[in-house]
Image (cartoon, rainbow over all chains, first blue to last red; front, top):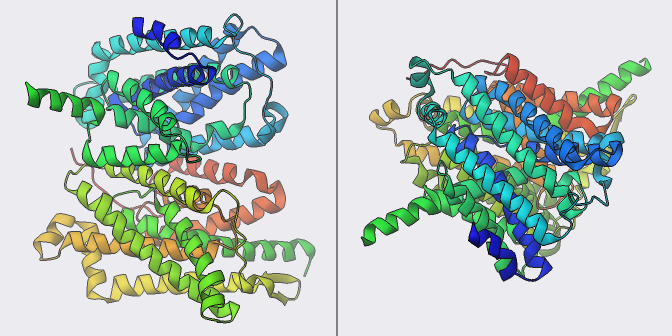
Length: 295
Length: 305
């Protein structure tokens, strides 16, 4: 926490402070996906859709209807959560690859609606001049806000996964049929994971437009779902700290290696492939294995 | 012929042409799924690589270096793309599928192929840049007119190549010993292994065939798409939809669904505008998944506890 508080002081330039805010947002997104992918074991490739819903619903309510930021954010989070439940309705019936494609389709449809429903979303032209949340106009304040929320969400999820709910989700992940035979209502708990995961992604979405100042559908392309997945996998699925590490590493690594055009995604692709091939448990597992070997 | 009928016939022809392109992309996906129970997310990028290979083969190698006519050059480029796809298939099998197969996890290889996909897309972006390449097929210049129906020679080439590929694939699977072994592996890998079939080899062969088909699909799609490093991705999402609508791993279902999606797309463009094609196709997919997740032609599978 102290580290968190001191970070903006260590990085003085606006550029690096911007990266810090982005990193906090990525941590939120990675945490949200990890609940579904890591704990409930559901391969969800549609997480970018909920991020998009959070961003668009809050922005449209503020810009076109003059709502207060916090009220709009609350509605946007609920909207994302409800959409998460809609995807869960498919997840109850589908498994593995089918769910992967259905959730991908979900993200594609959301993206296409954003592009085509121009009357409301302005389509590819985008929405401009979006202000940060009132009172958080400067970068340091915004970082404390998003970072604080990420920390709160971390604590919340950490408690959830250590509670019996977490046990239930892990049971569904390991073997759904056996879990059902023990009297676990898998459908309900999958819906819980998808709904909560979607709401958290929506929450991250509320802060994104105010941070960049503009909102275009391109920011919520399917590849964003893939980068969230890369963060979770590279860090270590099914652990709490893993996705946080993954998000931090994959946000900063491309910035450190800057110089060759659009390098970010190249790094993501490479990291994702290598981690799956050579350290299936991600950084967390590799680290603890290394630690054990030493002692 | 009344107007609406002429229009319907015209759009059906356009639809079948589009459908054949989609089938070419989807065949490889469904083949890999049928034999390995795996999804290859990098399939899209094999299509793109095939398209770039064909582009350079047609514009540089064939017409400039070898001095061939542009029509022969384009046909040659299809063959080149087929070969490049096959080589890529060999590489991805050795690098991703084969090492991960032993671990028996079904999601890891899928995630690895997503990584490969992002890697290939952005690698090509670094090599070829974001500006679209102009890949003209000499056959697209010639139009055939029958009554009030028009179509290009390119669409004839596409339909012929697709039909020939499907026929060759079927002949291979039904008539050759290797094809029989492949079907055995797809039904039950372990038992096939006990019968003296080397599953690893045949799985490798499947991936090579499917990638070669993807490369060829790239050569056919190149002149249709805006040729950028992300060209394949725009088609492959639709190919996934097709594979699911047709029933994963089911060749007949995939062909049927591919043509169906092509025709639906052609009529959507006519009556609703081209912007919402993906919306229509994916709504179709989600409806299909909600009603009949096994696809048009159901395959029977038992649940193991």
